[in-house]
Image (cartoon, rainbow, N blue to C red; front, side):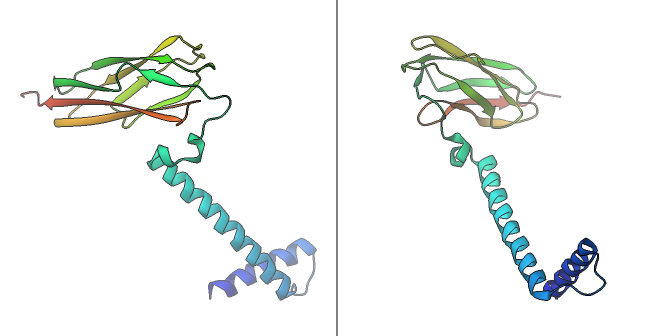
Length: 174
């Protein structure tokens, strides 16, 4: 039924486009419909790939590094704030060194939720130089044990590096 409706639509479009008062050739309408279906399938596959990338950045095709590769080494990649209160602001600065032979370019740093906000250097980091990723964690009304991540995308192999922060968020008495 959908196929017939699509053929009617394609025929109507072809009639208007060609300025003809007779029906368009159904075989060309079918070919047009099949091309549209193929294009739709490709678009759907691309959308699914984008959806996977937004869920898991490590599976994203865009996480492949571009340009000359280098390496970064963090002094620590995990930090535990310990016991903190709801609605507090907690800051941790992660220090790293470009241990490669090329300038380090951080393309992005993204927190796993809106409560975890990273700040990162936008300029290239020279080989041997150090830099900092500042992570601010505001738990809001979250409670109990919390684990949050920051995913850093750079011209390294692998392209993504994950920093982890943890806290035990205590409820503020009313």
